[in-house]
Length: 139
Image (cartoon, rainbow, N blue to C red):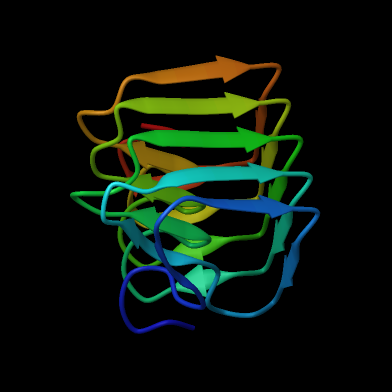
């Protein structure tokens, strides 16, 4: 359980994660910043949690210009505050394709996703049993 936003990996620069599994790490990824590009495909986030925002991923101001998540699964992820799976503060291009969010929970807003000032595209993505104390399953 990370005390801040996300936890686990601090990403600066352009990174690509492929076929990664994050299982009950209680941390996930954290603070994607410094105008990075972030791409992830065929990754699994099971039981990751955060003491603040983004149970699996937290994208803060100055974060990636481009964010892409493809063929990935988020199951039983949680955040104390916003974004049970993903918290995105500001991203110029946010895309999620063929992903599944199941059993994600936020103590604040956005049971699966919390996107603030972020245009987003979703294609063939499922949200199942997501919940938030404020603002619904996905915000």
